[in-house]
Every structure is written in C-alpha cells, then in structure tokens.
Length: 582
Image 1: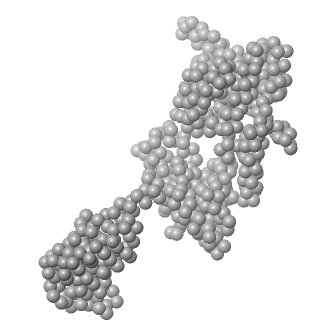
Image 2: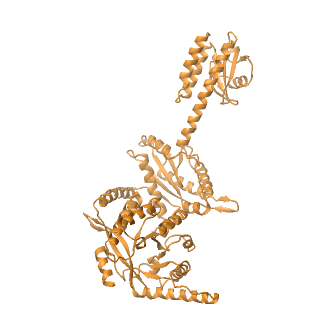
C-alpha cells in the first residue's frame, strides 16, 4: 500500500464516517473499504465484552466471536483464526470509546506504514463514535423526560401519529393517567418528595403495562400509555392494573404515601391526530376525576359531542368578546342586621344574538376547559372597572376570577395597568376566587394574594366549605374576607354540622380580622340564625377575653348576599336599586 493510496483511502474513510448523520451501517461499510485497502481477509470492531461487527471468515456461518474477542484484547501480531487459519493481525484501540479495531490477513505481515494507517483510521473512528454518542444523548434529551427517562410529549405524539395510519387493521388505544391531588402533596411535602413520587410511578407504569406498550410522561403528574391491538375490555383491565400498581404504598422513612390515579381511555379513529386522541383520553380522565377520583372512564359519543360543543362555544365566545356581547349583572351585598347595601358583586351574562341571555353556568365551564377563560375574565374586569368609573359615588365591586386567571403571573401587573387606565381607586375592587382554585397550588396562591393586596385590591375566598381545605388554611391565605357557601346557609338550623362550620369560620374571622359574607340568603329566618350563631360566637370570645384580662376587640363584620336582598340585575337596574336603598 503506497503512501498516496493510503491518503486517498483515509480521505474517503473520513468522508464516509465524518457526517453527523453517519449510520452504523455506513460506518461498517467504511471499515470494509479499509479492509479491502489493506488486502485483509477479516476485520472486526469489538468492546471488552462483545464483538459489534465482524466480516470475512470463510465458509463459517458466523464469525468466531469468542476467539476474536480474545485476540482483540491481546497484543498478538499473529493468530490462528477459525475460518481463516494462520494470519497476521493488526489491532488498535478506537480512542475514547473503549472499542478495538482488528484486521487480519494471510499474506504478508503488516508494515509499519500500514500499522500507522490503521492507527489513523482508529482515531477517526473514535471521533466518529464519540460524535455519534453525543448526538444520541442530545436526541435522548430532546425526546425523553429528564426526570423519569420516559418518552416526552413530542416523542409520544410522533409515535402515535405513525401507528394511527394502521388503525384500521391494528386498533390503537391511549390511556391518560393522572395522579389524584399530586399538586397538594407536592406543595405540602416538597418538590424532592414529588420527584420521588413521579419516578416511582414511572417505574410502576413500566412494570404494569404489556411488553409492547409505550409509556410516556406529558408533564407534571400526567402520564400516557399507548397500546396497539388491545380490546376495550383489555384497556379497562390494564387501567385497573395500573391503578393497583400506583396504589401500593411508597415508603419515606417511617411514613407511607398512598396514591390514587384517575384514568381516561380513548380509541384512535382513522382520521384522528395524535394530539386529538390524547386530548380525548384527557377528557375521559377529567370525567373520571369528576366522578370522584380513582376512577376509569372511556371516551364515548357523549364526550365527543361535548368536545364539538366546546369548540363551537369557544369560537362563539371569541366572537362574543369582539362584538361586546358579555354583559354585567350586579347583586347587592348588605350589612347584617341593618341590611344596608355596602357593595356589589358583578355577575356575567352572555347576550347571545340567537338564543338571548345565557347564564355563566352554560359557558364559563367550557371557557375554563378550552383555556379561553383568562380572556373572558379580563373582559369582565375591564367592564367592571368601566362601570365603577361611571358612578358618581361608586360602591366597592367584587369580581370572580377563575383559578387559571388568578394564578397567571401577569395578572398583578395587568390589574395595576387596568386600574390606572380606568382611573379607579384599588379599594373599590375586590377579587373573588374559590377555595378549590386556591388549593391547587397553595404556595403560588398565597404569593399572588399578597401581591394583589399590595396593590390595594381586596381578595376574598368564595364558596368556602365546598373544597377540601381546612380552617387552618385561612391562616395561610392572608385574605380580606370569606364567603360562606350557600349550602351551609340553607341548612342552618337543621344541620348541626353547618352551624358548627359557620361558627368556626366566624371565630377564625374574628381572630384573623377579616369579614364574612353569607351567600344564598333567601329568607329572613336565615338572617336570624346567622345572627344567633354570630352572637353566640361573640359571647364565647368575650368570656375568653375577660378570663385573660385583655382589651376587647371589634366583633367580626357579618354581611349577607342572596335573593332576599335582591336578585342579579343588569348594571343599569342594579345602580337604580342601590340609589333607592340609600
């Protein structure tokens, strides 16, 4: 082999293996070309424990792997190789990879120049393998979840799109698995515990599914299992197996964490996209949570119709905002027992051009599910500020915000801007947010409450008692007031538990210095019952103060809202009611 021929061969080898997209087959073929350049009868690439590639061993059905591995780990320049016989050997390390490159021929021994040439090939091959390994790690990082190592959303959707093409011959099913109350555990126990939970669940999912099923993590506590060739009954059985696996206790020191999961199942249709099938399974999972958590639901025609309806409502809501079809109603909030109107709550209605006035219950849930709720909420706030600014002597106005809008990181700066644009004093605006929404992320909610109150805007917890928080969380949330849900007001006098809850909230309100609004007051008798609970709570507090020889403080402020004081009315009528009442 001449020097010029070696240079040409090495250049061709570099061109073949130096591309970033060089495949293992291309690398093997390039090694074969070097074997031909050296007039060698055999070649091999091996690691310390196995042979990756071998070629040229006479009539043997397969190369003598064990023998080749033994030679590649030695410094021998000659060997008797099965299938070739006695031959000369040149062996070099493929730098930086733990691999070895071997060539063998039965003719002359390898010259010094040929050995140097093989070393150069080994160095190039080492750079090639290292580059390929780096690129593979980058591809893995791009395609896999960093915490669990599972395929991520992009990888799952690509795989799902590919197999949906054959759905007519091989059914494709997606299971959407969501851990129940994971956010609560993550917030209360710390993110390190949350990570342990997620990695444990991912391991259990891998074990619970079939060998050919694909498990991936979408985000947070959301996992997906993609199945081919599974029946409806088989998918439900798999969902139950997954729930049983996740439900095994996770031990952390002396404590045990017991998890549950809600599962949604969706079958792919021929014209579905991967994104649509996952969304369908997500909807089924959401219905499982609504059914009480730890349930399994299957996406069906009813849910499909709901999806179509939601898309239609979403499109019409966008038009409604553009055409200014959302209108404000107000309902008075009164002081008890005087019944003096002290503020108003703004309620939204949709003045639909075809169907007329639509209540919030018929479009707000759809807006929340579609993610369009923030645009709706902000439109309501702007209308409310405009309403306040238009009054000569305005009353404070409260506006409900969804959990999504409330935790939006841009909300505080947007509120500050909106107040300034409309020239409204911050103390005239109160933000109401439900107890359930606050409990989704306690730490984030507490921070947001503080930031909003720093603007001078009040924050009130709405529908208190319907969520899963405890009275202790009232200390976590530094709010201005609490609205007791109408269900407790309705059962005052007939349900001991309701009276006890109202009394406990009043006691906490007095200790923390916030106001109480009783929702759903429809009868005068309910006022008497509220005042009675209020009076008894106050008496107990006064006795405790006397016993401690402390200076008495002002009693908690009690307010009422409901049909007894006024039904929701358009803002023009509401303003007239307020003027008459005053």
